[in-house]
Image 1 (cartoon, rainbow, N blue to C red):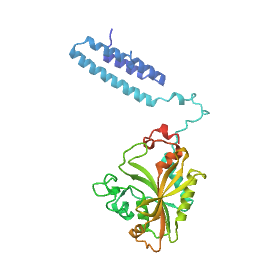
Image 2 (cartoon, rainbow, N blue to C red):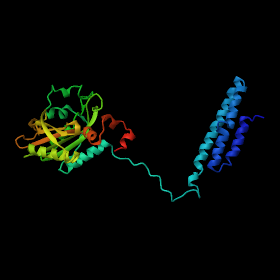
Image 3 (cartoon, rainbow, N blue to C red):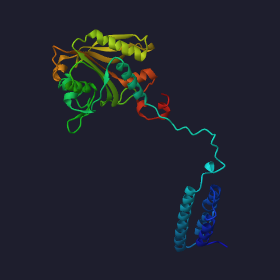
Image 4 (cartoon, rainbow, N blue to C red):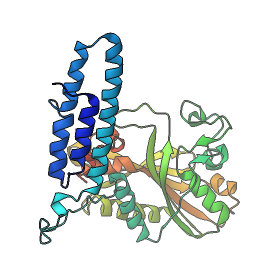
Length: 324
């Protein structure tokens, strides 16, 4: 004789009261909610009923299913775990070691660069990523018709601000508020609307450096960069300086390192601070002089870690990140 939904429910209620372990709970679940359980048998009877009877029968079966699932959840929370029940727990077993995170390879590289310059007396400073044209361009002697001011090369906001395209903006802010002597490096994110490929991204990291006093000379610039690059890439690293042009430095150079069979690779730009930059922050150009330099963090990380594609840094793929 086929039991009714009410009869199955009463039977289940009686058995639920006798459940005292997780093994009993699993046996009950299989008996009532398993593929061949009693709830499945009730549902199978739908095909023998009329349309009106099927509606009422289905509603009652679903109600019973909800009741049984909720009862199982409640019991599951109240029953002790078999692995921790008295007599089953071995306190001599080693604990489960939680996963420990570590710094992203970009953060590792930034910290290493800051550590090297810190040993030379450079302080780490930061500044805003949303800037004005004055700090990003004008104060750095970048003319109104310079290509970098165009919307194709800089992210502008509707309010007239922009996302900084270089961390040189921090140098201006520091000089506005502090008198020489200064030795600073400014790490941080910068933004340019570049097409994303293996060596370009619309967001990347830069570190700009600045040294200002009353007697700094170009030999000191070369000495600082020689020492930095050899600390970073090894004491046998070959380095060369090439004449270049930057609006905010004069004279300016690009610095290359020799890198295996790839030959000379450009690694950073540098130069003596243009007097017009000092004028923009209110320094007396007859009393101060200094040098500045800038480098891309991703480029250095890619060289040191052997990473062929800049996009790997931003994909949050733990298989990649765990290597470092």
